Amino acid sequence: MSETIKTASFEYLISLAKENPDGGFTFILDGESYQIKDVLEISAIASKKGYIVIY
Image (cartoon, rainbow, N blue to C red):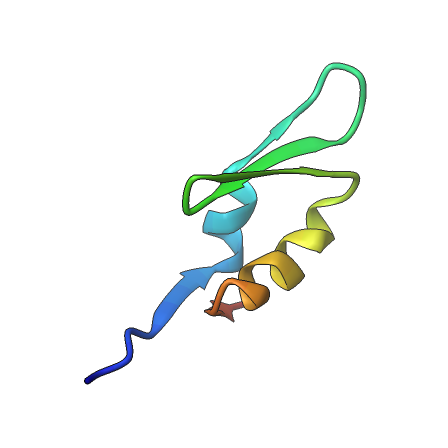
């Protein structure tokens, strides 16, 4: 059984975050939605989901 390695550029991940009118961002990754205050939270979320983030 082989393991899939998921990679994503930080710039691409940031492009997935949409700014909310009331502040913060909505970030959707692999069909899961996250309400975040700062785009810097994106790396931690992606890492927890098994992504290698490329800067």
